[in-house]
Length: 336
Picture 1 (cartoon, rainbow, N blue to C red):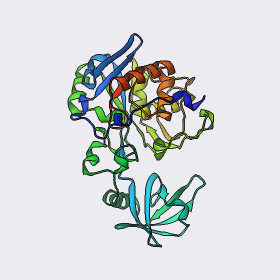
Picture 2 (picture 1 turned 45 degrees about the horizontal axis):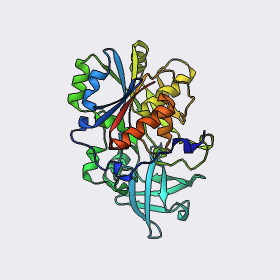
Picture 3 (picture 1 turned 60 degrees about the horizontal axis):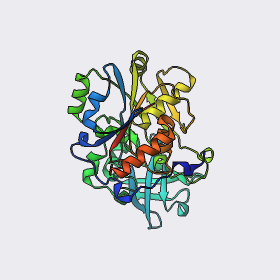
Picture 4 (picture 1 turned 90 degrees about the vertical axis):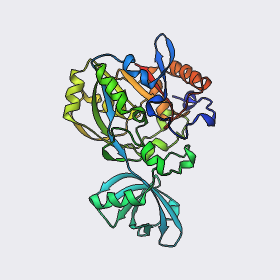
């Protein structure tokens, strides 16, 4: 499909720079078959049904942005993408073209070496630490990898808490599964009281979530692979559920990836699934997701799920009603 079909005018001031407080005070646009309804995230227990199964992504954002110096003395910035081994990470680096295999990199107390360069501009960094010791060093030396449309990507101490969901427990993401940012303990208690059940999956969100679509046709766009896992307990819960409600596009992508080969089962691996209109959804019935940027793969996904014309109308309403967009913004509830 033509990428420009997924374009729309988004005033820059609607891209949220901080989340609302408390988190469940965010606005929610309920995109129903009978029209659009302006609601709040706190209305969610009344919008769902007893027996619904909510699927959350329990990935944890790591402080994946490292700033330091290279052996020549010049500045270097690395965005960690995916762990390759106990001491090695795939990363995007600036200035990537100037780096050579064997160059030494210093990020405060953490040292590394350029071990390989890839055609897409990424590099492999071999660090001088491994395993838990390496993760501890990254936690100390790194910064929260905010997307560039939030304060130029410059994070502060507040973002360490703001850019992490209530469910985060497994290190590995360079971006938050942002639909989960709206949930509080009070909201979870209200959902449980309403008879709504929960389960979790893990999908480590990669740097591909920041990459713009630079081609004219969706068939020409290549997605970066991301690692995920579905526990047996979650697969069993899905098999027994009346209706599946995904909290965020990351959980949806993982479930629908595994469902390509049959019923959802316990699974571990990588997915590079790219969902556009015409996609055959087999698992997810309802999707809670934030508002996404024009021409993004995520707006393509929600258009596939709920219909392009429907989402164009919903986003036009959201812009007019001054909803807040993207990672720290408001959300919408979509029905397949």
